[in-house]
Image (cartoon, rainbow, N blue to C red; front, side):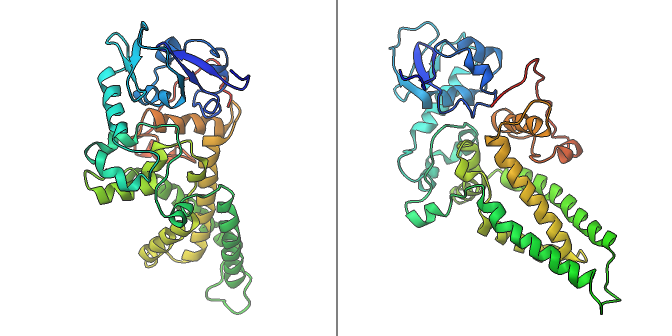
Length: 341
């Protein structure tokens, strides 16, 4: 094999983790010493989920046959383990069967009816592949959003709203009845920012993780807004929110809360600052390499726990605040070494 390859052994098969190694939630350094070696025991020790075994076959590079001691590989390339293994062999076999119903070389959105009764189980079993949603090239292109598009789009809007409100309500000369002090202006900004933290949690928990049941239409909507992110969590072009749909959500929320809050545009400015920070943190905790002891290191491990272990908890991405409030907090396992990505 070429030196850039990263072969590992499992159940008598060889897998190349070269593309995955930097995305591995457990860091690069936990894998380095297993290059060319078996990972069966270490996966067991660190309690990998069924989804981890399910995803492993995406990196399979060769077959060594079925005469191995720890299990075999099915026709679809999914691992079928023997009963003595710690993970659930029946569960892996079922995930494998679900996956075989879809053709990943074709748009997925029109195929979701095939796994509708078991959508929640399927969507929370991640894989390491590229995902196509639409057959129409233009529609498909609109689903890709490079991370830098978000600040390019939102920063000018935030600056415009903030400055226009500041000059209209703080630096104005003929608005005595409406004038705000600098402190009051900052208070509205901070209130809007704090309001966003609640929206971040609420949208993630009660909208993005809404159970669509068996309705194909609701499943398609859910897959578009968030399910896709859980199914292919390593796709860097689908981890920030596209600006146009985000604008539609902003306008909808503005209409709902317009009668409730005063100086709503100033509060909106604070909320948009919070949203921008959230989206950048979300991208960074997926693809960044934070150092041990930093805030982002803790949030990267916390968000990985949400993706791969506790889908129904750990909803906070930029902060754990509301997870504490609503008792969905997760205590991430402490390690006696630092992870590197």
